[in-house]
Length: 146
Picture 1 (cartoon, rainbow, N blue to C red):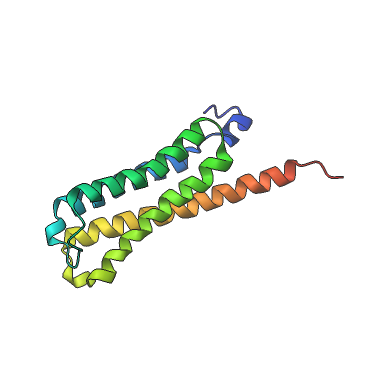
Picture 2: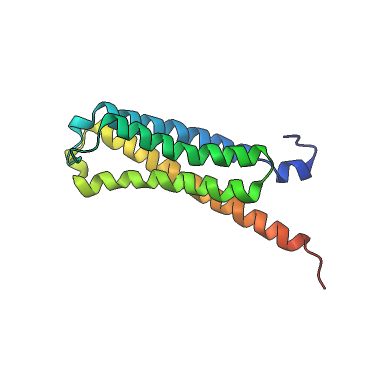
């Protein structure tokens, strides 16, 4: 992205979004890897949920983020922005662990990985929503009036 070219900057993945998505990616990987590797110790987890299924679920979540990144690189921000928001929103699903067992029943590390993913996901959801709103507003301002 060339900072001296505002038109190019408006139609690519903003740097702060890329940084936030990278942090969320790391938080998501940490949580899913911890979940997969210690699944036997997560209280209340259903028996059908295996280590492999946890990693497959992470790949599904990450695919949404990868698609957002792809559309950002292709300078399709109206597709990238909502996908970034959705990618972040998927991180909030980590709170579902607390429907299976109380916070106090999880280890400190489990709680840390859950909340790290939830907080970074919520921040990315908010950033993606604000970016989408900004893009829509810019499009409305650029439309010729009759």
